[in-house]
Image 1 (tube, helix red, strand yellow):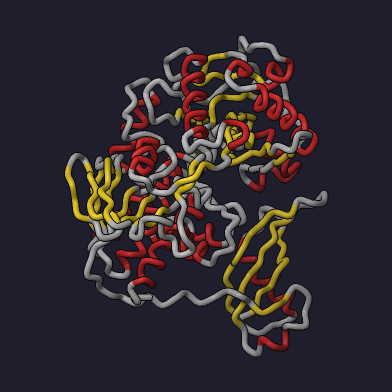
Image 2 (cartoon, helix red, strand yellow):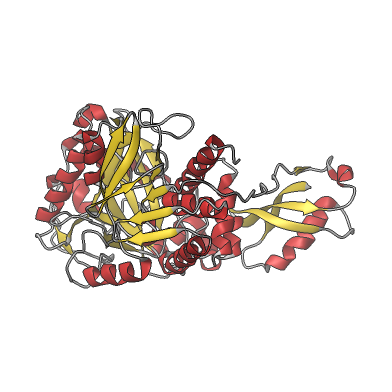
Length: 519
């Protein structure tokens, strides 16, 4: 199979025109089949192109290898699934991407996993979240953080990952299998959107059950009994259950579980993390800044910006949501946490992104829970600053840079449906974060003119982007001191998004199977 790169189309072209471009690159009139591997937007010059890499099946491929942009494809054939049966059934805690894909993979191999998720099924979870957004009560177990699908369900559904693991493509293929647009396989910035994710996750759940898996919602891991370096029993909703192997995909908002793990002497370490705000601009501004005159043809644009401050601290944007909204993402009473969400069409007026500052253990302390405590204190302060009613404290960028409180918003109106309270965010953060945000915003404005515009809005606090704790494990994905515990995903410190967390869940499942000689 050949890999043909740099196949270019003008914005607005029919995708069917790609075949002609490929034929021209190969200088052939012979018949061939092709599959799009990747789509990207080349905006480096005045004229913008959609650029594709494709895998091509054609006879006598060796005669094309001398051509420019043509190489042998390195795409591997999907691994054959060997269906097996197991003497014991693994338990999985958490139904975010790592738990969901771990369960799916094990179920496909006839391991009949049993899943426990503290939150609700996605149908009930949607109702709980919407009720909270409309001013109703917060459900501490069924919210933006907890429930079927994990925190990524209420996000843009971005499927980008820096991981080069070929399992990444497998993850995308599974999403397509359960209803996602096949274009996510090759798009450079694939996304699904919250409204589509909930449908896909439900179908994945149904498949796990069809294959012999078992799923229990509204069930929380409360304790575990460890003997001779192995978990023998787990306590879930007050009931003690036998446990042969435990996959732990709890997410980093399960702070009570981390405290329990520490009490049971499961080895964990403090790690660096990040906190900051959600920054909002008009989506029209983002489109024009990225695509210029082609903005109307290329759909909602995104961006990713980074800066290292003069003191060496990283400031960066993360989880950018084109045409989205800022959402209240707390999972605890009297805490305020912000996140971003987009629907599939990305057709809202505003764009938003996390704007984060790196925080090290030197900043907050080296104790296991110093970072977690720092996050919690910021969330409590944000609740107070917002008015004690789950409004997000918010400030215009212009006012933030001038160190003056915001009293009213301008051409950009905040999108957070639970409401915002104008304030001075300098009262929320310690000096090192405020200074880093100020320097980072001005530096990013040089890369994307208008990023620091007066009316852009900052909402706090974005505190759940990364886990401040890592559950230490070996190269075989097993806890370093508990032989049958498999920590996995973002909460355990081994992933940073939907795809990487899903990959990690699959990796843990594979290691479990290898240990039993089944893979």
